[in-house]
Amino acid sequence: MRTQLRVVVVASLLAFAAGAVAAPQQAPAKKDLTPQQQRMSTCNSQAAGKKGDERKTFMSSCLKGEAPAKATQQDKMKSCNKDASAKGLKGDERKAYMSTCLKG
Image (cartoon, rainbow, N blue to C red; front, side):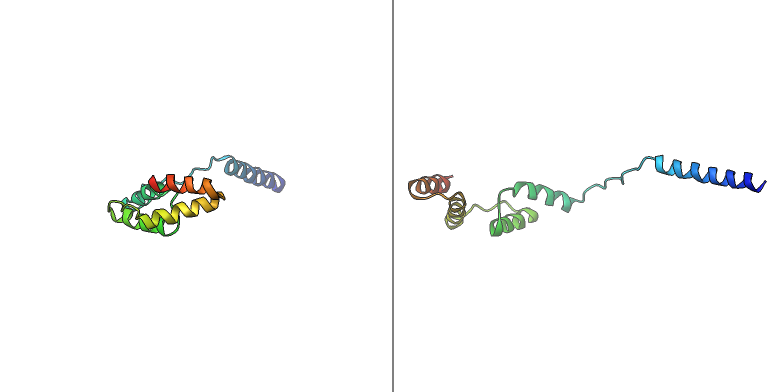
């Protein structure tokens, strides 16, 4: 009788464990984003390619709902110069790149 009881208990435990392992895992429900989180997501995607102070300024004005300020000539010069240096441009190639970059 004791042996039968042990067998039943062990079989029950094994069945329970197998059911727990086989049970599908449910992903937690995705929460809706708050308006601030939505705004942050939108501004973040619009800020792609911006770095440093330019990105900070853009994100600040975007999160406040302000229209983006146009870059000053000095900001354009910094950005274009940095890009030209990163590309390793020199001489006439650099001049041509800077001219195009500053116009656009």
